[in-house]
Structures are given as C-alpha cells and as structure tokens.
Image 1 (cartoon, rainbow, N blue to C red):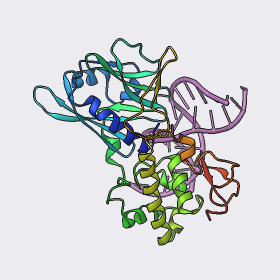
Image 2: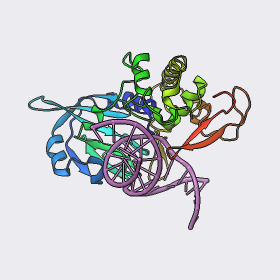
Image 3: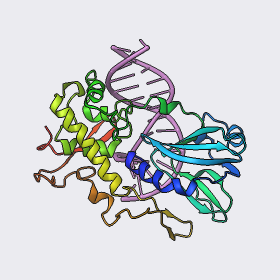
Image 4: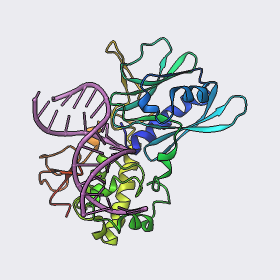
Length: 282
DNA sequence: CACCATGTTCCTTG
DNA sequence: CCAAGGAACATGGT
C-alpha cells in the first residue's frame, strides 16, 4: 500500500474509527515491527491509553495517544513498509496469518498486518525527524526543492526517493511525476534547470493530489481467512477506476505512451524499476 | 528455479 | 563527516 496518497487515505479512513477508543490489550506477534521498542515496554506504555487522533507525515502514520488518567500525550509511529495494512476486525474474528500487532479495543481489534514485516509500529520517533518537507504544504517550495537537488549527482528518479528531499514520494509516484513533468529519470539531479525543477515540483503535487482524490491505489480491502471479502473502501471515494488505469506510466513497459504512442521503457535505477517515455521525457 | 514487488536501514567504499 | 552504491530484511506472486 504505501506511498503518501495511500497512507493519507488510510489515515482519513481510520481516524474516526479509532478516536477516543481505549486500548485494553496489546498483542505483539512479530517483535521486529516494534523495534527498538520491546514488547513489555509497548504494553506498559499503551495499556489503558486512548486514541486522541491520527495524522500523517510523509509515509508515516502518527498515532496520537493519551494516557487515560494523566492525559499525557505521546505518539506511536506507524509505517506500512511494502505490504502493511491496518484495519479493524471484530474481536472474535480470526487473526490473519501475518498479523504483526493486535490492539484490543473492546469489541474490536485494531490489526497491523504485514506479510513482509518491513513496516513499523513503534514508540521510536527518530525516523520522522529526518523527513523533508510535506509535498502538499507550502514548505515544499521551489527554493527548498532546488536546495535538495542541487548538490546531487544521482539521477533525479533516485533522488525523488530520498525522503529528506521531499517526504512521501515512492517508486510509483516518482515515475508518474517525472512523466507528467516530461523530465528524464536519468538526468543528474544537479543538472536540472530551474524551469524543470519547478515543473517537476508542480507535477509531484498534482500526481499525489490526484491519487488521494482517487481514494486509494492498492486495495485496502482485506480478504478474510474464509475467502470472503471484507471491504475497506472508504467514504465516497470513487473506486470505479482501477489502480492500473490511474497510473499513466508505471508498470506499462512496452505499452504505448498515452501522450505520443512510443513504447514505454523500463530501466533499473538503484535496484528499482523506473518507467518512462523515451520520447516525451528527455 | 528465476525474477519481480508500493520501503528503509545498514555497511562499505571513496 | 558526507555521498553513493549495494546488500539485507521477509514473504509471496507469476
């Protein structure tokens, strides 16, 4: 699931479901995802606390909690890694195979499921402190973006994945933004002209904004153990258009560019796939 | 068996 | 100390 738009959609979906609920029991089924917090530490800190709110920073979820008695606020940092999901299930429902953390809220359980266990649900907030500006905020200015790029010899596509330059862009939307801006993924970040940087900045914003409006990309529904779908589509988000259809270049190797018809190319940069149109992006 | 996957961190090298 | 490149993490799909 995880780039900024998917996390944003998830946060909006979960926030009203969690607000004011009390954590009664904490189950840690995979210690790696809470590291460096220990299971006993997590349990002693979380037990009896209430969800005060849920926000997002880059691809991270920030669970704002307050101790019931003292009302002392603190934060749990969540991250979905590559395959993480978060949702509620009835207390009696069978837990999914890869449930990493389970919080009992009374009649329902909050589930953090992650097949690859690359995600996080931890008291350690250090990862969030090194993030660059939020791409949809005024902090992500032309000056800030230029500063983030102008010293780097790395290809711009690779640099867009650097979360200290701008927070929340991942492998899919990096290709999408470059395609929309008509910027080659291969050009060294420091070689980009001001006009290109500005076009790319606007495209990053547009692509992320559109994806949030689209509701979600990867599906947020959970397939129950018995094969029945438990739907986790949210609100009035329009899901009539599929994930693949909303992406204009990602995963379209060999298919015609939607602008000029040239076959889309796939290359590997920093061990990740990049998709681009060799004609439009130069 | 081979290769691919929405991410981050750690280690090495220069 | 910094930048860059690559491996590692862990599981599943095709």
